[in-house]
Image 1: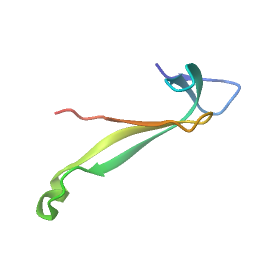
Image 2: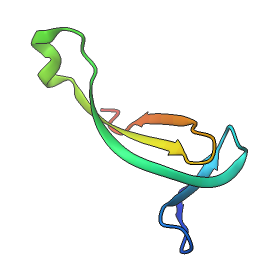
Image 3: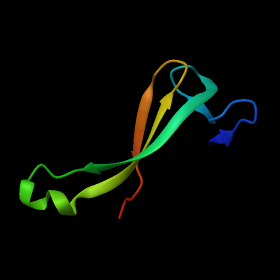
Image 4: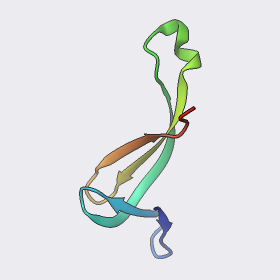
Length: 66
């Protein structure tokens, strides 16, 4: 689970690579999932992207599983 850290401006989360709670940069990206051009406008989904500021490990998770 992500927590805020009062001493550092950011979020701390558990990093699988570091095996520690480390500072992460977290953002939301809209990604197009369809490779067909005519369906691309209907296949955009939000993804939560986080990157460990210690080792650079990056992960993403689809936010809408409807």
